[in-house]
Image (cartoon, rainbow, N blue to C red; front, side, top):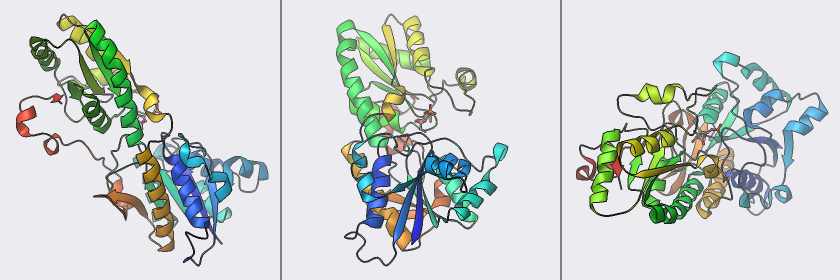
Length: 367
Ligand code: F6P
């Protein structure tokens, strides 16, 4: 029997459980795998790479804690639920400050794992690539609500997050209008502005600020004044958490870096709202959507993509397409080498979205 270990790494999101379900189901379902000669065992690893490193293969209690044998019955309803039933962590066994790749390799061998399927973003799949280079059969599935992974048009979690942003801003609009206020809404997205861009576009934001194009407050305020001239009472500004102020990139971000070097949530929206209030006669409020964007049940699109990616991962195992990631390209499921998905991110290129005349000379993106 071939033993498949499945893990979810990095930030959780809706769609992870569905991917685990469909890997398990398509590996074990006799109808789906009728053409298949190989029999599989599927084991869920708790808490991402941490589980595979911390587990003690010789201690049954530890194995019980970190290894979850999966079958069709166990995962039957998983696709309806958000988060990850396996648990996750940001542990990277190849972290140069605490390299634990020897233990990882040793555990994989001792546990008799034949293939590792890693569901995650750039960091998790970076570790999968390193593991592949060390001779372990690995497969990746793309996941990040930021949708900034290279090599695929779609990463699990993004659609649900855009829906959350849209729904929340729909609610905000009524109160913003009633009080004639400017609302600054902060989305996730440290490096890439996809969530802010799509969330802002779907919810009718007046201005969208993304990390890829640093913005000027003068310009934001003058756009708002322009709007006032048209006698509209309120406006929604969507700002990605990693958006930068032109010329002062360091100032905003330097005191907002957490222990992992991530910019912490909650800085930029408050800053922009306060500056607007000071520079104009508008009353402002801010809202940080934060982890709400990663919560709740998966959207229909995330359920579908989780299913397609899960089935694709098992097909890749059968075809021995190791060292690759399942991917969506122009509406079709395919796969790409893990190497092409890591080391850089897929960023917003505004020229692809907007006619030059719409944004020319302006750094802020206007809907
Ligand atoms: O990478 C996904 C993501 O949701 C980012 O958009 C966000 O910056 C980060 O994770 C938040 O991390 P945490 O859940 O550790 O606070």
